View (cartoon, rainbow, N blue to C red):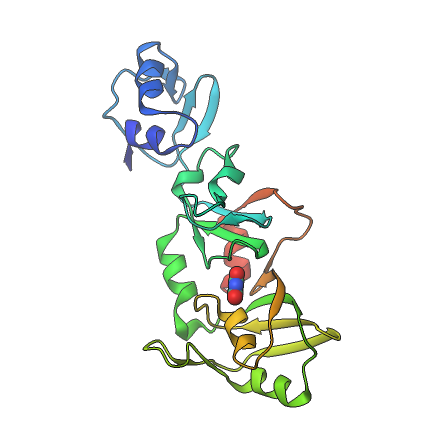
Amino acid sequence: MQRLDKFISNLWYWSRKQIKKLLKDEYVLVNWELALDWQIKINFWDIISVWEENIEYKKNLYLILNKPAWYVTSNKPEASYASYLELLVDYPYANLVNPVWRLDADSTWLLFLTNNGDLTHNLISPKKNLFKKYLITLENNLSEKDEEKIKSWVTINKDTPKKYLTKPALLEKIEDKKYYISISEGKFHQVKKMFEAINNKVLTLHRVAIWGLELWDLKSWEFQELSSEQINEIFNK
Ligand code: URA
């Protein structure tokens, strides 16, 4: 349950000032009846209608976004990059969902967002060993020895208190300098740092899949909601 005013103010569309006016002007309906009390509690089966647009109070929200380059995965712009929220201006629940595993500003494709904290907790747990797959291009060719290192372990954040030995990765060569890499962890800039550790450089990085979750036909800039059933099917197999 959630308070009606909180629910509406969390939506992307309206400022607080506009919300007050909407109520005063009798534009807000709950289950097709005029809402006169902002403090009432709504349930996820209620239909809220604001300015003749129906907005369900959904309990669980799951979204995939095909992220283009030059957007950051934080809700505030950083340096010269806009926030990914700019890509979700047409999604009324944008402020309610959070990205699970960020993508760097220059990284693209699959971003998964949800408001389901239990699922997020479960997915990012190291015990889950959930693989994320990336398509990468590298500055230099990889020797067989380099490939073996990436597949077994490399040390990232060397000479810092965050020094870390990576877990085994899957590497699939497409052509020279072009690979799929799948890793089960999600350290900050992990893929880039893994290749830096063997004196190479990731030039482009696209996230192709998170376990069985993919972008399917979603084009750059597009987003799509998924149902709880689809999410269960993908992650609880
Ligand atoms: N690893 C990286 O280095 N960058 C990303 O955006 C995702 C994984």
